[in-house]
Length: 416
Image (cartoon, rainbow, N blue to C red; front, side, top):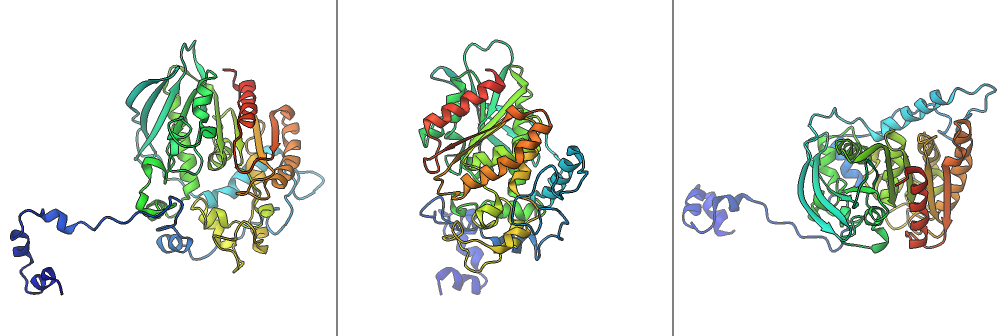
């Protein structure tokens, strides 16, 4: 027994504090600092079982009677039931959004003013970089970097640049740290765009390093058990658009979005759910659930859509094998990612896919199958030329040549 334990037992712990005036009383009540994981990708606090514990989720949501549920193939988007008179597209579109809602969850009503602040402003080469914050609907500040090109003439187009899965977070697209291939915000400001990149929840300044990979999701789910982390990320993207709309040098009709990997996922869901985005390009950020083989990456390997975890049935899927092990339960998921893409129509959409993507091993086939079903939707809505694809072979990456093609595609639709 330690001296402190003995004194507490004797009822004299208060005297122990007085006997050591050099140690503040507050310090004696603070928990010791937690050790940092060896890698930013090591799991500490996050697990799907922990999510179930903190949210009380005990079973899958009630089965949705949808055409996609129970079918292994990606259904036709315009006429999934194969009936003689399919419903009008707007009705079908509303039905897809309704199917997504239980998994994205319910966002609380925004209770906080945007309250934007400029923290610093400095010249970075030919452009100006402002480090700013604005408040999420739930009240916390979102750190962001706004890059402004020189010699603006009137209102300029703007591109949102969500970051990939890295704790460099917004610093990477801004060109301050990380992989130069991912300096998207910096490359685009050099082409005449205003660009904005921000720290997603669980990344950058919004991350507790001791909590490990996606560890910040646990306190989020404790506070918002009926929401999803991906739903929160898209809500924060919406606040980023709100912020841009306050700037008198931004054209709110020409807001685009571009991202790689996690940033690509953010782009695709943002384009699907926020109609203020005029165009979007995703690189290495798409894979259909059924073609991927399981939904483990969405519910266990990340904290993005944990309710999909109830569709993980194989006992052989784990953190090491989920990219290689198929799971028959995946066909019961009531929607698939090609339906998310369809919500963007007829706005311009570019899907850039690596046929050698080791993160999404089946991405090439997923993209081809999804685009084949998406093309008739764009044709019906008069936007045949607005959906495009790029396929390349270079791992899970954004090679300069591919980035150049993406940026040129954005130029076509946003006209910097």
